[in-house]
Amino acid sequence: MKTLKTLLMALTLVAAPSALLAQAAPAPVPPPVAADAAATAPAAPAAETAATPAPAFDHAAPDAKIGQPQPEGLHLQPQVTEIGEEAAWMHDVVLMPIITVISLFVLALLLWVVIRYRAKANPVPSRTSHNTFIEVVWTLVPVLILLVIAVPSIQLLANQYAPPKADLTVKVIGNQWYWTYQYPDNGDFELVSNMLPDEEAKKRGEPRMLGVDERMVVPVGATVKLIVTSNDVIHAFAVPAFWQKMDAVPGRLNETWFKAERTGVYYGQCSELCGARHGYMPIAVEVVTPERFAAWVASKGGTMPGAGGAKNPDATATSPAIGNAPAPAAANDNAGGLTTPAPAVDAAAPAAADHQAATKN
Ligand SMILES: [Cu+2]
Image (cartoon, rainbow, N blue to C red; front, side, top):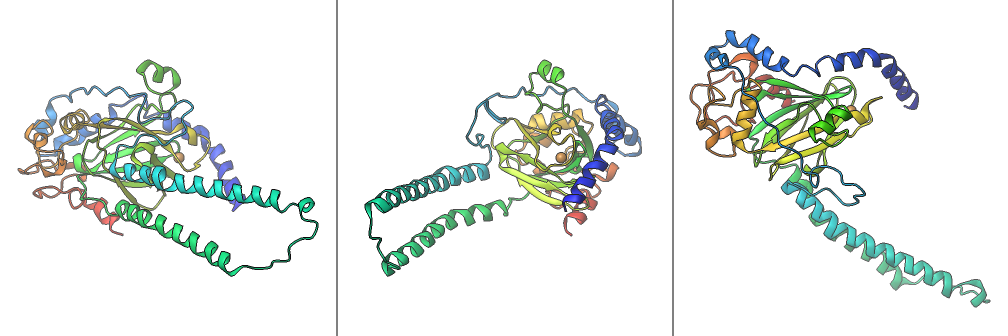
């Protein structure tokens, strides 16, 4: 195993220059996405909606107190999802107090034994070999403690594995060493997300080594289903403020979800040692209002499900549940996006049949 890992590392280093080139290429050119969409658009019936140039989108500035690590911070990041709050409660209210009490109790017992039963004070040692009562106590009490922990723990686990119906699906792909995000529900456009160099991050007011050129943008209050995979080695997509972490494994589609309850910018990092630049592929997720999400999608040349065009205000004004806009003819069927004019597009069932089929495996 170890030799295999060493071999992989060696290969990684050999491949590094070309990989770096490949990585550098898409970075300075964010427009390719739009250009790409424009190139395919004429084939689609909705060409007239793509005729006007994509409007610009102003990204929000990050809040230094939330969604990113704090200097000298020891505690969990403030959680902005229900699951995160539940898990933080589990950590703060259940686990930490129990761990603290048990640790102090065991320390006190040790000190008591060391002092009270030291050889000097007991020239004639006790020959006690067992005590039934104390043996029952030290078996039962830990069992009871574990049972007390198990109830909220299993509840939390069950909640994590019982996502609400998805409003939006984003496919997250790990690469050495950057992330790509695909939006199959929104015309299947793709973003390439690279870390900003220090200078650039400073200029844009982004935290060092966390700021990226293309953020993943999602609507607030929407259940976002993430389909996580990788193009090369195992990465892991993790955003601490969402209590969310999922391995990105080549050849496999892992599924996870989150539902952010407040707008803002939340940072994460690749959390699986993936090679030389593992520490330089940060994640930035911007949570915005549904209206702003529609505007952002339009700025990327994408479409809102069931809207027939991103510029239709009705598509977003209805609710944070992005997929629930009443569906007039889903006009745009390019790029494997909206292949069926399905009414009430539910992100779990819709659009990208290929993603769907793959998810089901
Ligand atoms: Cu990685």
